[in-house]
Length: 105
Image (cartoon, rainbow, N blue to C red; front, side):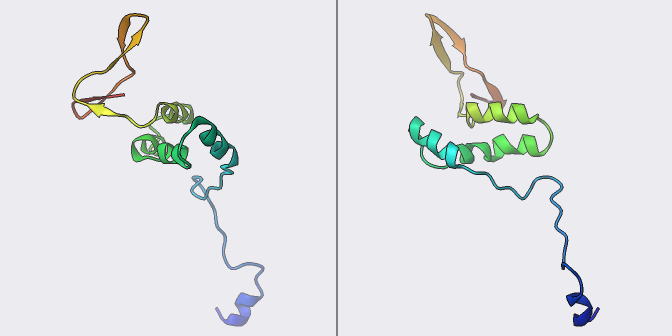
């Protein structure tokens, strides 16, 4: 192809985003909600795209709704012993996930 042939084309390339890799999100509302909640700016994005939260979605192991729910829960906090929270005097295990022998919520 010569330069003169290239200049006659209306474009030089076609970009196709088959799996939504190219993203733009207006984070104005999220930033406002983070401020109201007392969270550091960018906290939501850091949680949403942390590997342990984002990778299962990218691999098709969870649905988008499950991913959204995992963002609400936040990244797992691991310890070697189960944690409980008080619910009217009755201790119940928190929602937990097993990670390499540790109990994570």
